[in-house]
Length: 217
Image (tube, one colour):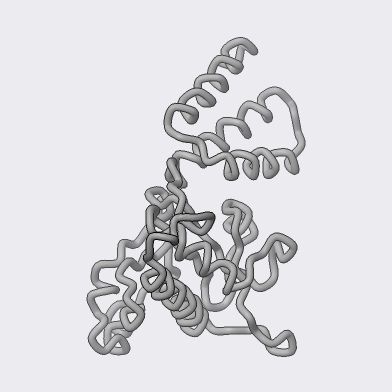
């Protein structure tokens, strides 16, 4: 990570955290681990970011992005937003719930006959590809760049958007509308809509009023 210019490492509920053993392997990059916050939940770790890209080789393949596609999107969005990439544990990878929580899944360009990649190599591959795209963006900073490839601002953080999605889920559940597949589609719509803070408050207010009208408050 440090070789490629990355500074922010977050750890989520590590099952073992051999700090001293890890330090011996870092050879000048100890500051990354010393400054890394340890979170108890994924929601806590992702809260202040605008978008999170989980990595997986076995889930949500039909919607997955290749590493080249994802790195191009990340490099563009990172110009104006806080972007994170999420990796699972060495042994188990990411849980389905973690992958489903976010919309853009990255798959690595590995050979199908031997797709298993250890965690350190996965991080290195992703960091390098994004670094290359970021360097290209720096070289492209010319007057004609302001076109369809320009970065967009994501107005709400992951935490704010997840609050809205939870509101819809709770409303649907309380009304007896049991259709889990609809929840994901609602989330997809709002992810594309890129609501601003005013629109976010409007929908939260609508949910609260609907709950009140239905006698749920």
